[in-house]
Image (cartoon, rainbow, N blue to C red; front, top):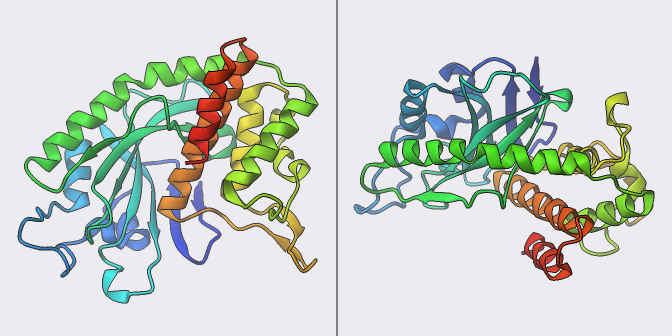
Length: 289
């Protein structure tokens, strides 16, 4: 099964089996860049992303998703920011979710190498980024880039148990209808300004499959995340025209929204577990940064 991004502004490609270099080159050519953008100086150490991926492949990681932001400047298309999601061979599908590492990079100076935790949910073929379970690890374009990224990837894999434990907590927390709508309302403000959302909370809470008719925090979070990120929710524009929301395909926007949603869910979990409301406020404010 393959998933293609809906947005015409970005290219997104996801498969159930590891991606070949030909597939990567087709949908995210900047991953295959042979040189840095001309704007980079002599101090910039160019290490092509595909070389890093090959190093990760040797360690048992395989790429399953790529996305690349579209740029108006055609000279940057082969160097612009891109995202690759990889899974280790030891993480076979034994549950609905498997941990992944999320690698972000560019060759035009807009990004260092970033490595962070991710989770892929098979039931909806959708991925999220566990923003605050493990701090993002950034590797500059200098020195032993391949080795540093591989080391960082293993650190993220080692943190996967914490991600799994957090998901188990979310699954054990039941939300009332009102709490679900409060969560959805806050999530809408992460993507649109207050009062500017073209859809309502019912739209982003709508289940896409029978398995998602549950009231726990994990399922609620996934319904909202899938509807916001993948788009396709029907609503009305500011002028009253019927429309459907677009996929959040851009690398920056996708990462930011995913991380903010995770922070929001984590704050609600703390509140439901009777922890300090100050912790919830801190997580809520972090989601809006």
